[in-house]
Image (cartoon, rainbow, N blue to C red):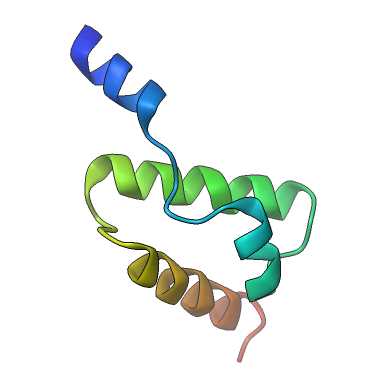
Length: 67
């Protein structure tokens, strides 16, 4: 458990807040939620690169806007 906690503390999302804003994520709670989601995905190993993270964000934005 301690090892996982230390790993979580060191885990950072592949993208920064500014990168997310450039992709179209609104500042505010949506930005924080997106960063948390990307951090969790990286920790779990479901997103292995920044390119995969960008694609996931674009899919989410498309889905959220109905488009």
